[in-house]
Image (cartoon, rainbow, N blue to C red; front, top):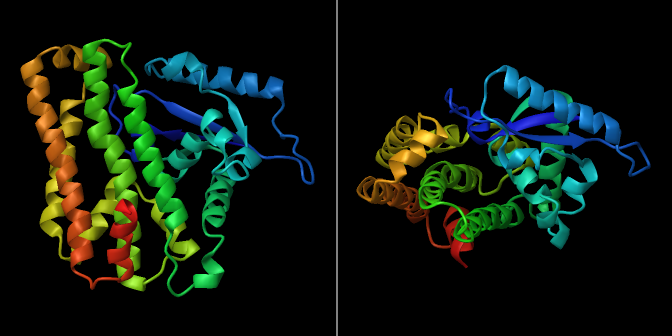
Length: 295
C-alpha cells in the first residue's frame, strides 16, 4: 500500500500552519478483488497517521478524519468515469494523486499507481501516437475544477469568514493545481504535436509551480513571472493559522481587495493559455487544446 499527501504538502509550498491531507491506496491479491490491507490494518494505519500528525503539532485532520480511509487500486482505475467515482471520493483522490501529491510511505506502490492511472487515460494513444490529444485527462481536470467550484457554492452553512477564506484559496492554490496541468499539456503539444505516456508521467510528477515555470521559455515569460509573483504574495498572505486567516476575512474591505487580486491571478492564467495557443496556427494541437477547454 501507499500513503500520499496532497494540498500544500503535495504542492511543496507548506508552511508551519499547513494541515496534512492524506490518501491511502491498497493493492489487491492477484486474480482477486481482495485488498492486501485488511480492515483492522486500515484502522491501525489511520490511527498511526493521526498519532504522527499530532506528534508533529500539525492541525487536526480535515473532516474529522472522515476522509482517512483506504481505497483499492481497482476503485481508482475501474471506477473512472462512473457515478460511484464521485461518491466514493476516488475521483478526488485520483486527480490529486496526479495533480498535487507527494509520497509519504510506499513509494513503489505510489509510482505504480501514477503509471496505471496514466495508462488508463491513454487507452487510445496507440491509434493516434503522432497526434494524441489527451482529452480524457483534460476533461477530468476540468471536471475536477468545476467540482471544486460547485463545492464552494453549496457551502452556505458555514460562517462568512470561513466561506471567504475557502474562496480565497480556491482562486489561487486550487486554480494553480488544475490549470498548471493544462498549461503543461499545452506545452508538450506545442513541442511534440502529441503527448506520450512517459511525458505525462513526468508532467504529473512536477509540482504545479514547476509546470508553470516551464512555460517561461515559450515566449510568455512576463505572464509566468506575474503568476509566480502573485502566488508568492498569496503564500505570504496565508502564512498564518486558519483562525487568523478567517479573522482577516471578517474585514469586508480587506476581502474585497484580496478578491480582486485573486481574480487577476485567474486572468493571468487565462492569458497564459490563450497566448500559447495564439502563437500557433489554427488547428494545431496547442490551439486545439484551448478549444477543448471551452468546446
